[in-house]
Image 1 (cartoon, rainbow, N blue to C red):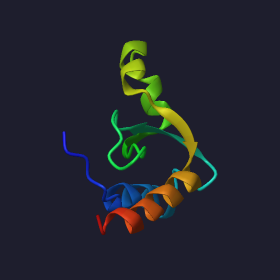
Image 2: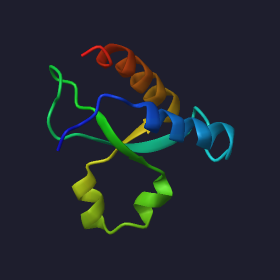
Image 3: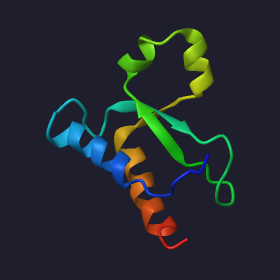
Length: 90
């Protein structure tokens, strides 16, 4: 699978949930899923994200397969914005 370095779509989704839908704020936590293999040095890009409620609706087996990690929304946004700046030139 080819992993994109471009986080524009994920950033937009999260910002819409904060600004338009008001279901998230910067201090909330979400679950992120990273690529299994690093794509640049040791960096494993974020490939998807979930609300806590999304994970609760999955079986334990499905949750284990995801290897999701709980991270604060503001931290995730900063990482994706910084990664976009770095990797768009790669």
